[in-house]
Image (cartoon, rainbow over all chains, first blue to last red; front, top):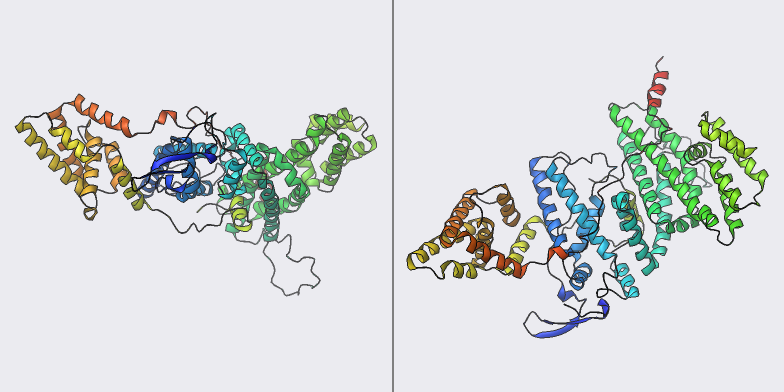
Length: 425
Length: 198
């Protein structure tokens, strides 16, 4: 056991070498790692054939047994294993990549034994990540914070895709713990903010890719060279194969849920998303992509009607998540600073109004947003917190919202109508 | 195959993750079982300790009977592991079987699962034979003596699981589920397709 009250990264231990001679080495040293051979995770079989079930159970039993062993290790031994055992990192990574999620097409385990095993492994994986995100386990067991930040970053113990996976897999019921974990990771290693910046750019490409696949955004659309009339037409949501449409909807559903879960659990990331004009890209995607996908699901001929219904629900779920994400972004980057009475309230208020104004042409998005989060309520809050708000502007905004409802041919819920009329007058 | 996921795209198209070839598997089940057997063999209880325990303080006839059962147990154990792995592996397997069957009178589901987890597929006759041998050994020595012996060996080698990290953490198994917007009822689909039917 390593000595106490000294950070683990500075501790030395004296242990017998493989040849039996005593030697002193750093507490964090590859020679102190046990060769355990963690196996990678495989998801529960979909068809539930006995052989596949047995194979899943055996894999899963090895993993839970090994992770429980790992969690029972003393602090120094745990970290040796985490840093130097490649098979452990592969095992954890395989879980994040392949574990079934609540939104997957078939998530019901084939048998109670499989369900129980999946629950055990799910918890053990979470606890392992939780321990890996903790730089101070007790008064005696801790790291120098900067070294901890270096270790988790340089060894890819956490990276942005892993953090997003953790949020979508565990965030629903363990939000507070996850918030602490992620906050600690970003605090001890600010380089993760740079990675997040890079990731947001890729996330935006994901939405562009969906539009491209639906034939709504051509590569080089602005290119100088005109397209030949007989050029091969790009497939659209109506003409692509059913499998492609299914993949796009599943992808959209996963992406919107993941982003929403991450921003909900770690609102500090909202600023990074905003710095890439994420909000306008998302609303623009909503306006352009959603009606097209909806139309395809409505009008295409599905042999399996339950698949059609499922796709509709997934698209609708994605819409909800996009609307909620926009609200989260507005709330954390504009409204929250105003409500907290921070400096430059006027600037935040101006920004919020600017955003709402930019939504006015996106009528479909605006009505769905207004239905979930009435714009009138936010304007009212704004007027209370910042009395110098230009009333002509807010009235124009609220009238714009009303006209958006009219132009999409939908009727606003009664309760909201009264509030916004009062606001506008 | 996993469905298309955002994080999959991020791993492929951004440079924030470690690039690894996941098609190459580090360990398969067979390798894992061998490693597990190796780790088990390194733990406190050894075949020599069992032999010593079973034959000490016994009169000659009992010693002979115990030796015979130990031989049968070792033979059954060797049938369960790959024969080319040698004497040490066979002895370690016999230790495992002794521990598994010391308080059992038949080969139940739990025991079958535990043996398969350790050695992979095995002949059921070997399991039956080892269970019977252990049963006769325990009868010679007495249940409580054997139990005390096993417990004393376990306490020497096991990690304190009750002090494991996270034992007091309230974990929720809740997961995100589909939550469609109320404003987009599915009934719209039928309306739309009905309007085309003329």
